[in-house]
Length: 205
Ligand code: AP5
Image 1 (cartoon, rainbow, N blue to C red):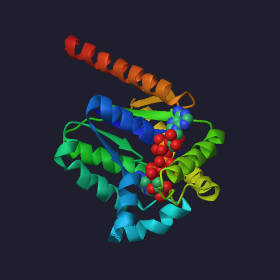
Image 2: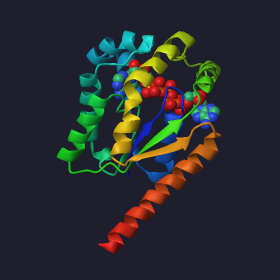
Image 3: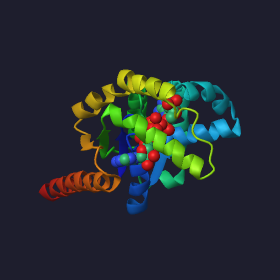
Image 4: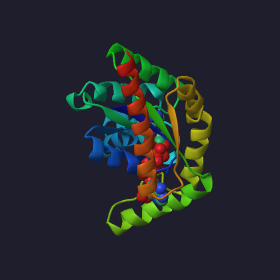
């Protein structure tokens, strides 16, 4: 299975990706996690990304496309993957199409988590509190100012992907305002629906 999880900051992409990984045995490819690891390790990419990420701006397309291109070449991506936080712009989506085409791979679905913007700050604040309770340093972009910028970037640069994938008949929209468990069940339900539709097509052939 090859999936994309799409949604605004704090929508639950990482939470649901982890649950999908556990149930389907495929890898989570989170550009946010990869970039945070690069920042921590002070690699050249990390040094380039650090201030942009802390401010809530996007990292340049060529940087993240390079990261994903390398990651898709690794053996554990061969069984399927969940892209969490990538693509985030139309040029990134076009680059992904080209990468998959070169590998003769097909994208199964894009799951859009739809969440009211008013709920996002509370979720991010909860994450800050949870990380502090575990003795971890909260994310540099988990504050009201950076969240406003992340949301603005989402609306301007990422939301056009809803139409991009809807035109390609890949988009499945899920209500992200339900509980985590209910969202997981709904994602399973929509994925099962495309699986059985694919199976029927194969039988018809
Ligand atoms: P990234 O790490 O991708 O962050 P994001 O998209 O802003 O998303 P979050 O990780 O904040 O939220 P999420 O949707 O994963 O929610 P989560 O499950 O954690 O990107 C960070 C930065 O990296 C970007 O701003 C950019 O600078 C850079 N970057 C990354 N990818 C890039 C790209 N492709 N191009 C350019 N730049 C890129 O949940 C959040 C909280 O809510 C948690 O506490 C969780 O427990 C809770 N929660 C989850 N679901 C629910 C629910 N249903 N009900 C109640 N609480 C819930």
